[in-house]
Length: 84
Ligand SMILES: [Zn+2]
Image (cartoon, rainbow, N blue to C red):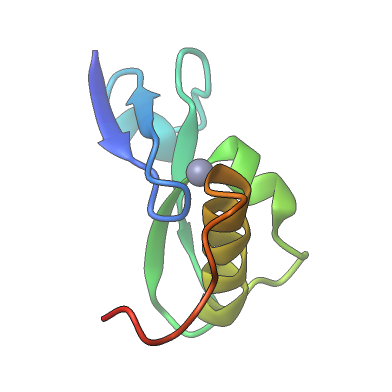
């Protein structure tokens, strides 16, 4: 089975049958999907991260969820913008 890293939390997400199966609405065995946002960008996210997004997510919301997932993973690591 193929897998793809979630763009938000970085977990490997199993994708049953590949991308085509995602678009044909076959979620069985699949842990995430590619979201196309209002601004035209595409993000592959696991369902857990998708469930944290608001109804009409923007790239900013995806980044917010990513930051929250990061913060949850390293609860004692400081969040900052200076670690490029
Ligand atoms: Zn995720």
